[in-house]
Each structure stands twice: as structure tokens, then as C-alpha cells.
Figure 1 (cartoon, rainbow, N blue to C red):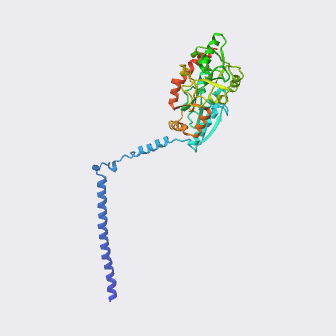
Figure 2 (cartoon, rainbow, N blue to C red; figure 1 turned 180 degrees about the vertical axis):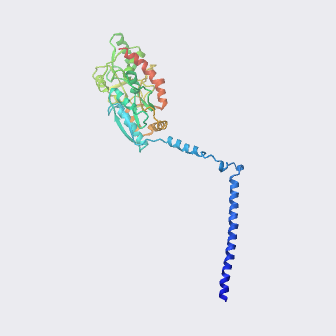
Amino acid sequence: MRDDQHRRALPRWRWLAAVSLMAALTVLVAACEADEAADDDVDDDPAEGDEPDDDADPDEEEPDDDSDDDEAAGDWEPEGEVTMIVPFAAGGGSDLLGRAIVEAFEELEPDLDFVVENLTGGSGAVGYASFLEQEGDPHYLLAAEVMRSMLPFVEEVPFDYDTWTDVGMFAEDVGYIVVDADSEWDDIEEFIEDAEEATEAGEPLRVGVPAAAGVDELTVFQLAQEAGVEFERPVYDGTGETNPALLAGDIDATVVNPSDGRDELEAGEFRALVGFGTDRLDEELFEDVPVAPEQDWEVTATKYRGLIAPPGIPEEAEQYWVDLFEQFPETEAYDNYMSEALLAENMQLGGDWRQWLEDEWHPAVFDDLEEMTGDD
């Protein structure tokens, strides 16, 4: 009997417990829903300065995405191999220039992968023409010197001096009038005095030049005009011929760049009389040699050294190369190159280089060059 009553009482107890539990859950759920409604009221309250979620512009976050894209574009870096084109033969001045820049860039950015390609012919025209075919590709660079300006002036070529993307120039190669150290001329004043007498006698002094219609011959022509004398200008094939000709007494003087005449100057075989830069070169062999402006002569045509990229490359790529080139003087490669080449520093970055060409270098060269080539 007790057992039956007990069995009947259990379901009733369980039922009462279930009812109590359900009631408690109902109260808890109601409380949670009240909290969520309160949160929604806060989120939707325009007094807090936030726009309601329902009215939010689905494109509102897009400016941040665009910003990220812009930043990525500004961080352009070369992908894969970069080719340095040298428009002259290996071992020459332009080749040494290109390889010095490559060495410096790899020193600054060890992950860069460079290859140097020598494209010779046509006094540089072949290399420049091939470079033009790389339009828009920032993975090509060219070690540039005065032929950048001279080729369009003297040849029919498919490019002009301003065709290219300017990365920058960093130095000028300054020409010097040198004579045999055993000659009677100790300074430029004595040399010009004898040049005047030789001109009056109809037997002009002979100043040999290493190439025709180049900057070296032009400076000799300009010096004669400024000093009011005449020079005979025999043309040789490089300083490998002019320097021995001077020592042999075949000519009275010649024009050398510092690196071309260093051995003879250090050996006491040559004497430098005047330089054609705007300032004296801060090197032991040349620091006491006057420059043309000190004589009130406007003879300052030099051989510039720089770097160009093909036309039409992206602005981000252009800025990358300009920024890297600006650090060139901070490298060991730069110090070694400048020490060997004995150049005068002149850093002109990007468009400043083109402006310098238009304002200073071209006016100093082309008018007189045209007159000189029609003079003979």
C-alpha cells in the first residue's frame, strides 16, 4: 500500500518541479530580452553621434581599402632582374659608371638582382635606341653621359635628350689643358702669351683632342675664342694617342680628364695649366690648378655622369629609383668610383637634372658646337 501511494506521489512532485523550472526560465528569458532591447535603444540613439546601423552606407569602408591600395602602389619595388644598359664597350668610362651604380644599389638593397648589358655601336646610338624599346618598363636603367645630349644634336636618332625619365646626375668630368712638364710653360698666362705670338705669326699652337666634335674639342675652341687666339686642333683616337703625342712633342698641349692624365701628372711628365669646371677640383693633383672662370673665361663645358630610366614608367617606380639614387653618395662604391675617376660632385635629382641641362649645360655647349663644326 505504501509503495503504491509513493509511486503515485512521484509524478506529482516531478510535475511541480517542472512547472517551477519553466517559470524560472520564462523570467530569465524575459530579462535577457529586456537587456537586448535596451542595448538596441542605445545603439540607435542618434544623440550619441553615431549613425543608425540600418542607415549605414555599405560603401562607407571603401576609402580605407583605397588607402591601402595607394600605400601598396607607393611601395613599388623591382620584381626579378633589373638590366643596366651600358651603350659602350666593357672596360670604358661608361661601363665603369654603370657598374659602380649597380654595385652601390646592391650595397643599399642587397635583394636587388642586376645584370649589366653592353650594347655598343653608333657612338652609343645602338644602346640608347634599344633602351627606348623598353618604354614603360622600370626594370631597365641606363648609365648616361654626354651622348644623351650629343647624339640627338649630331645624328638622326629616334629620341631626344628629354625623351627619358630622369633619375639623376651626380658628377661632372672636368677637362684640363696639360703640357709637357719639360715645356717652357709654367702657367696658363705664359701659354696664352705664346699662343698670341704664334697666332700673329700664322703658326698656331697645336692642341690635340682625343675625339672630333666632342666636349674636349669644344673647350679648346671656346678657350681660343675667350683668349683671342687661334689653336690648331689635330684629332686623335682617344687619350691613348693624345698623351703619347704630347710626350713625343708632336703637339704643344692636349685636353685630359683627371683620370686620363693622372698617371702622367703623378709621374711628373705632365703639367696642368687650367681646368674647365666652375670650381677647382678638391684633389691633390688639381687643387692648385686655376679654372676658367678665374680668368673670366666662359669655358665650363663638362662631361656629366648620371642615370636614366625608360620613358613612361609608373610614377611610383620613378620615385623608387630617384630615392635610391639619392643615397648613392652614402655608399662605399661611390667613394671608390669618385676616388678613381676624380670627378667633381654635382647632384641633380629627377627633373632638376633636366632643368640643369636646359639652363646651364646645353647653352654652354650647343651654340658654340654648331659654330665650331662649321668653322673647319
